[in-house]
Each structure stands twice: as structure tokens, then as C-alpha cells.
Length: 306
Image (cartoon, rainbow, N blue to C red):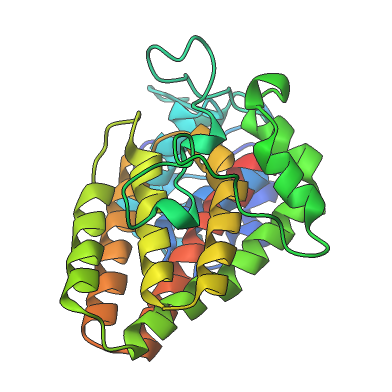
């Protein structure tokens, strides 16, 4: 019996010990990957509703993450409605829903999420205007990706929850994440290779500072603005338009998943390291750090929405 007091696993629970999703977590996004692994195990029915997760110590050892990281991942899924923790001799962490629950919209939203047009477009990045008041249309989708752009601009009020939107997007969600992993690291690397003017450097730092805002009403817009500022610093209008395209596509999904403090802290740290690498003129580091950031976001989205 585990020393932390958790009761012995039932025969059905013990069969989950060797499931492939409990393989060691690798890479720099341990928290996001752990959330994704746990969510996938729940959604695939590998740990069924009413069943208990393996003991904390055992699960941390199998995933090769710290118990602190595991606890924070469990807390995130508890807040999202997938898990609940029970005390006592027969306590532990139990699956209560394979679907979770829709996130609570911010106050004043009247049950709707902010419109997608609140994300800044490529042309508004230097002026501080958002797409909703810039007088311009969102960037057009890339050839062959029309369905991605169409899904992005359809009002969520008519599409249901973020999970509904993700299901309707189907393979185009994976396409958008793959596309992002190519263009955003490329933009960061190119920006780091350029001799940036003082105004460009100041703009990057200002956008980085604003992106740390935790106000639900402005956080997503500030985050998108930073990514677009990095793309603009590349000096390539085509790259900037591509980054704006993918930010528009993913914005609703990112805005709709549960707000997880650990993920925000990690994202802030990654943003800082990307901007530092750009300002230091280190293209390889800027590209690698942005890849890691995109991978972490993809893990979280796919884990919670698919």
C-alpha cells in the first residue's frame, strides 16, 4: 500500500499502471504535457468515470515529473471538471467526467466569449489598434486552408463550446498547430537575425510587458499582440500575415480553455526568453524557444479539446 495513505488500487485500476500514456514526459513543457497525458487518459476511457488515478508518487515516477508539477496538473484538470479529490482511507483523485465542463465566461460577457476580431491583425500591430476597430478585414487564409480560416471567424455563440469548435475543425486544428510551429519559430529566428532599430526593440519590450497582464478581458489580445510584434520584427510582411492568420484561427480556442496559473507563468517565462534571444541577436535560440512555446500550447489544446 502506498505510504501516502491512498488505498490499494482495485484490479481495474491497477491495469492502468502500464498504459502507454504514463510514459516519461520529455522536453521543456512538463506541466502542459502532463495535463495533456492525464486528459487523454480520461477522454480515451483508460481511467473511467468513477475510477481513481494511480497514487501520486507512483504516477510522478512513471511520468518522471516532480510531484509539484503533477499536483498542479491534477489541480488544473480538477478546476476544468475532469477530476475530484477525496480525503480519507479510500480517498484519492477520481475521474468525475470524460468531457469536463465549459469554462465560465468572463463577467459581462453575457454567456459569450469575446469576439475573435478582438485579436489584433497584422496591420494594427504598430499602431496599437485591434482588428475590431482597424477598419480592415482579417488576413485571408493560406491556399488549401480555407476551412481553418472559416472556422476561426464564425461567431462562437453559434458554434457552442471550444470543444465543439475543435471537433468541427477536425484535422484542420492539427494543420493550424503544425502551420504555427513552422511560421512562428521562423519569424522569431528571422527577427533575431536582423539589426533592429531602437523603436522596434522598444516595441517588443512594451508588448512583452503588456502580455503579462492577467486581466481576462485583455490577456488574450495582449498575448496575440506580442506574437505579432515578433513577426513584424522579422521584417517580412508575408510572415507577419501568416502569424496573424494562425493567431486568428487559434484565438477562440485559447480564450476558451481553462485559465491555468502555472501555464500562464510558464508562458510568460517563455515569452521573456524568446524576446531576450531576439534582442541578443541569437536566431537559433529564438527559433528553438519559440518552438518549445508552440509545442506547449499545442499539448494543452490537444489535451483539453480533443
